Length: 410
Image 1 (cartoon, rainbow, N blue to C red):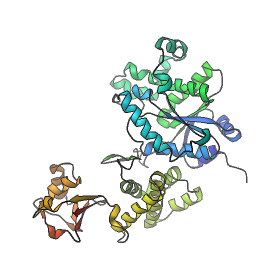
Image 2: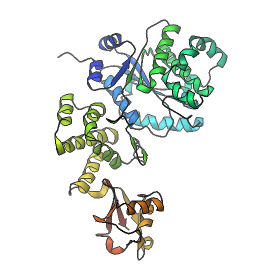
Image 3: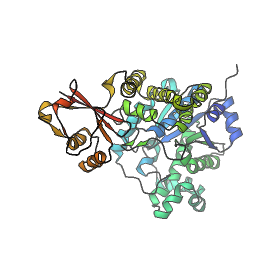
Image 4: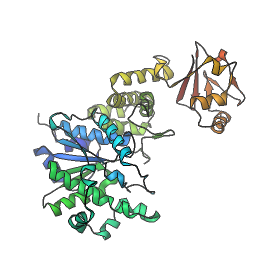
C-alpha cells in the first residue's frame, strides 16, 4: 500500500487553513524529507492546549519522515507578537524567557523524537539578540513595504488602540527567523496557527527575495468551539499542559465536557485515532456521544500526561458521575481537626478549598442554589459544616453541574 502524503492526512483531519502554494507544498511533502518549523514565544512557563494542536501537527509530519524545528522565541518574546491582540504584551526579562523556554523543551520531548537530529530545538535568541540594527535594516528592512505591512491582519487590531514601533518590528524579526533557519538547516516551510498568516507569508516572501529560492507557508485551524469561541479557556484560566498548573483530572474533565458538536473535530485534531473511528464516534446518537467524549478525554490526557494518569483521571470521573471507580484523583483539600474545630461556616469552607475566590462569590453561589454538600443542596449562607458531615473522614462539595471537590479531615 502506498504511503499517504502527510498533506492529505492533515487536510482530511481538518488542520489546513491556508497554504502559500498548495500544489507545490503537497508535491514537496510527497517527494522529499522537508525541514519545517513552528515558532513558540516563551510568554508563560507552560504550553497550553492551543500549542498542543501545533505539536500534534509536528508529530504527524515527523511520522511521515519530515524534520521539525521547534523554535523557541527567546528573542521575539522580548518584543511581543501583536497578532490577535488589542493590547501590548507584558515585557518579560531575559531570565524569565529562558526559564520558560526550558520548560517548553521538556513538554516537546513527549511528542517529538529529538534523537539523531530527527528534530531540532532552536532558540531565536541565538541570532536576534546580537543583531546590529543598521546592518539588519540594510539587509532585511529594505525588503518590507510599510504600506503592505499596515494592511496585515496582525496589525489592524492594534492600529485602533495604537501600535508601538517595537511591535511593528515583530514581522521583520519573525521573517528573519525563517531566513536564518533556511541558512542553518535548509528549512523551507513554516507552519503555524491561522493568526500567523501575515507573518508566515512575509517570511516566505523574504527568503525568495534574499536567497532567491522558493519557500512556503501553511497555517492550521485555530482550536475553536462550533460557535467560534477559542477553546482551552476555563473560568480558572487557560488549560495548561503542565500538571502543576492544570491537574490531569481537570485536564481530562475539560475534554470530557466539550460540547457534543465539537467532539468529532477534537478527535480528528487532537488524537491519532484513525479517521474511520473518529467519524464513527462523532456520529454516535443522543447520550451515546458521551462514550465518544470519554474516548476523547482519555486519548488527549494519555498523550499529554501518560496512560497511567489518564486512567486515574477516568476512574475519578467514573466515581463521581458513574458511581464506580476511585475517588483519589478528585481534587481534594485536607483540613486538620484543629482547623475544623466544632464547625466551619460554609462560605469559609468554599474560600478555604478554592471553590470560591471570595466570600462574595461564595454567597452568590449558595443564593443561586449552585452548591451541593454530599448530594444535598445548601440553602443558607449561615450553614455550618460539622465533623458529622464527614462520612469516613471525607465530604464532597459540588459546585454547579460538573465541579466536584473533596474535603478530607486529617
